[in-house]
Image (cartoon, rainbow, N blue to C red):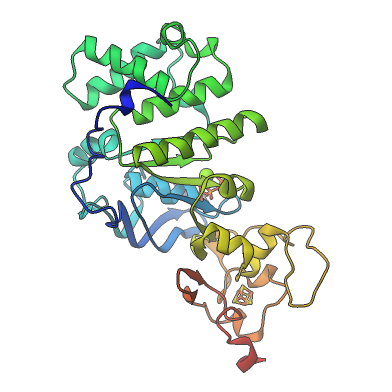
Length: 344
Ligand SMILES: Nc1ncnc2c1ncn2[C@@H]1O[C@H](COP(=O)(O)OP(=O)(O)OP(=O)(O)O)[C@@H](O)[C@H]1O
Ligand code: SF4
Ligand SMILES: [Mg+2]
């Protein structure tokens, strides 16, 4: 990447804080909705932190609370939602921030890209008009400088013939190109943290791989941290440094992605990987049996118990904590914590 945009320091990314200071620290975050079926805890006591320039994947099946987690961090849940816990950026809690301060934070500190690029782009305006509008909303940049920055951003996300694409309307671009534009818009104000919700699901496999490479590249080059939500382990493996596996609103396994893939500790993660469940068992799992639970009607005990092929008696009544299994790796399973031998 040789864009001029990289040759000058990016506002907000010229760290006034030490590199090891987490860009985002989420502590005990929970999001509760009132539904017709009763209270539903979509995000349940979630904690993690992400350092500068790291990529973290949030991995899980449909309905596990991945999007709810990102929306809670971004502060775009309905006002009827009850949110507890903290999401700290540079020591400031995004959860208790005023709506005005949160609006200022979006774009400059953190930015989000959604699954479907068409919903993020307005069909009635050109690419240039949309990027310029984003820049002018969050900064006091002049129209001419904003147009120049829009061009630099298209170069940054490796759009061919960027001058021409600036004048294009979204419907004139391919799906991969549109998603690159959405990424360019998210980068417009140089956020420290990018939240990406299934950003490549709508793309075919080859384009998906290129967009993931681009995001990975941007994270490395700009020192920008990324939290990427996906239900696809191969996407997580392609881009992430760390992974948090979510099930029924909770993190059930967390750690460096290579270690989690090499040595998964939670039966659900093993199911996602299609790996062996029991020591010595050689056949591969075809899929995880059963379906994801209704979060408004969770069973007592471990939420995974009804689908877990290695559950012990205790799993039906007690909820395991998320506890370390090695230095940076934690799992929420009695067996991973050596409880099985004592109980069965
Ligand atoms: N605003 C809301 N009001 C009520 N329930 C909600 C709301 N938003 C999400 N939920 C519920 O929270 C749970 C988690 O939803 P979420 O959208 O976070 O899942 P997800 O992991 O992103 O799934 P998918 O992979 O399908 O996008 C679901 O049961 C969903 O119905
Ligand atoms: S705690 Fe029990 S039910 Fe839950 S994943 Fe571990 S073994 Fe399975
Ligand atoms: Mg989702």
